Image (cartoon, rainbow, N blue to C red):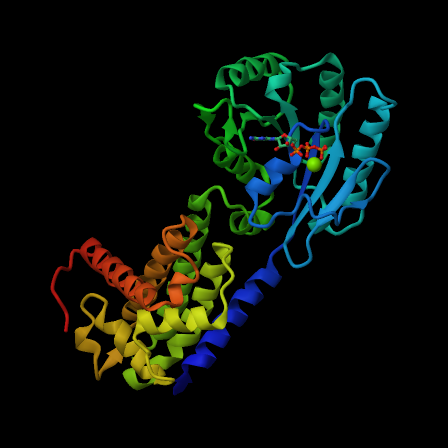
Length: 388
Ligand SMILES: Nc1nc2c(ncn2[C@@H]2O[C@H](COP(=O)(O)OP(=O)(O)OP(=O)(O)O)[C@@H](O)[C@H]2O)c(=O)[nH]1
Ligand SMILES: [Mg+2]
């Protein structure tokens, strides 16, 4: 079977798009007074700057729904109790409960709110009686729906103050999941001292533990603070692709038909890319293909792709010209998947940019990572023998 590198790149892009389109939207409600740092929190947690783009649609007098087209996250931005002013705590509570009820009653579970962040600013040093009452009533409602409330202590540049406030809140024994101190952005205290941002990774773990299974995949992909969540998801994708490849190869396939495996690996690469929330254009993907599987010409044979991969995996030398077993097909898929994950982690951590991927030096670097990763896999398998 003949593959054009362009076609393979095109297929991978379609695979990524398909993954993104298949993501269930994560719905988060964020409550907190004006200026506590709700927008800053959201913008530093997720891959897209969602909060200040002015596309908020008022869905009640107080509550705005913010959603970017094509990005599977909806934020329900609600004010907290403002002291003074004409704000009425009961009115706010009713609006919040109305939104929660309506989302559920719409019948479409994917519209339900999946998590609530209740934001309190640490420098305010206050957990007021009105807030306690408000939270108690809110929690009665959320428990009905198995919806969880996380208290986020924002602007916590003083860890000491955050700790005191956290203890004060915990003393109330409310049914909140957790109180998480966060400094979403570095905070300049004076010319000499800047408090470093922290806590968003902790918030992502707490949140991941309480949201429904159906949206965990989306959450791992769209958050940008916890690479481990993405890696876990990517490993699952590799494992199921390997299982699928093993099944395909379970009936020993003649090597000349090994190209039958390629679509599964294309789908896997698409899934991993989406898990990392990275969007890549066709040129970048083509560069990636040529530097990893060595398909440098415009057209490659599926057989060549598989042959190049096989050379890189342990104990596979003897299959050349013979048949591929299920185990070999699985090993090949795993090696490719793990190497690709290693590259995505570098992109995610800022050690490699998407632009780098298509430059000459970038290609060499990818090739090096790829070979190194495969060597690690090989050592893990207790096989140190060099293959041709
Ligand atoms: N350095 C730093 N500044 C923060 C942080 N959180 C909030 N701020 C600042 O506090 C101010 C208010 O933050 P916002 O994120 O706009 O607060 P908000 O809750 O969205 O406010 P409203 O939309 O008006 O309700 C801004 O000037 C932010 O830059 C933080 O973690 N670090
Ligand atoms: Mg805001």
